[in-house]
Length: 158
Image (cartoon, rainbow, N blue to C red; front, side, top):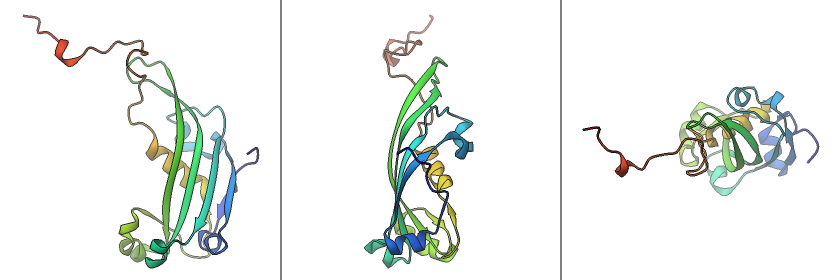
């Protein structure tokens, strides 16, 4: 996957054709992510569109999103460098308007994008990566520069 991922899509048209796009997203296309993590190599992304039975029932299309990469973050215990491997696989619903979003709640949260309107696919990927990232990233116990004390070992100073 050496090519850059397509920029804008029409999810409705792409779902009708069963489109699938593969490519890379570099840090320049992920400005919100770059404020909290470093991305030294582009994310490898695969995005496919379809109208499954459940989506069709609710007047929606589905985006199947797979993203892989490595994020360099800061350990919240020792404040040292921490590599976080990202392996994301999610399904995102796309609906035509706010009313359709309310009706499609069984599909979960949905993106509103009327037919014919172009959707910035990098923004969708970035949203899902941000949601999948650890809230307080930390090294695993025993590998962090700051040693954690088990709660039952804490003793009162008296």
